[in-house]
Picture (cartoon, helix red, strand yellow):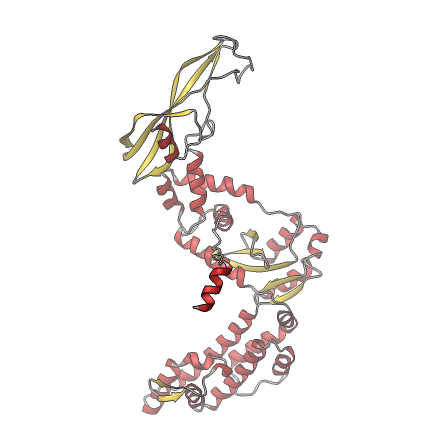
Length: 442
């Protein structure tokens, strides 16, 4: 029975003996708790204080010391191990000492299993308060365990990967943090509590030598102009890559704002204008869709239009205003060049003078694209993008939202480290050759 309970509690120390009728219920800190009584005892051969060998009764047992140790919750109640630790007395040095066990560190009353449970739970999307309630410890204890474990995963400032990715995320009101990762593996290299150029520059100069920084070949960024000058200074040999998603996002937002402007011009008391207004408002996604992806063969029912081809719906909407059609054609030319990674086509489109009917939104976007044209060329030549770092940022924001914010940035940073270090990776099931053949037949 003692071994079974020990295995149930995941106690590996065979010197711990669980008593008969060990499980009792009581109260601790005003809560109903479960207590499990056990004894820790063994024979000693040497005094840990004076190193004297035991001869006869020079070291003898001298009562017990009761410790209340927090262990992982069993069932619905907080669980504690009431461990009676054997006390010993040494006649040589006339001092006493207590039996030690690996289930809890010396001078600690929280078991190693409970601390391991805290670390595992920190990999999930749980607040510190929820983890503390699940593990039966205080929130300060949870954060202390997280901080101590995170110290073992401090950044390695001796080397940098060849391909980096930069981005930022909001962690408090009006405050943005900067992070950089290995774009190939998705490993977070470090997080800074500010994204201004001075903080970032000081960080790289202080922690990485020039020879290390010269080994970086590419840095992938969004369209933050502040990063461009910084990268040229910090990483002399690196090519700057503008993430293609942000290029498409820039031009799509400009086109959508143009649509909204024209749509609002049609919001009059005239019945025909009202119909055009409703159509523009309802089918905004079709105007942002890539022209080559529109359906030219399949008829479908569209509200406010009837049975139509998708392409004919777009064409009729564009006929409402010549300005809308001109902006749409310009938007599609840029979009197709980016999608096909055709740098020469994009360069030709951007180098042309914008039509007089082009909206200020598209004009501004095209001006921005012209400014970043050399880095856009790199995005066509390399396969790297900001997909990994954007996904990391989404998870970081979830952590921040669940915790209702973090007042201490270092606590937040340590939580992020553990969250991504211990996050379980879903592995695809291994299919045997026999099962593969069956699946092909099916």
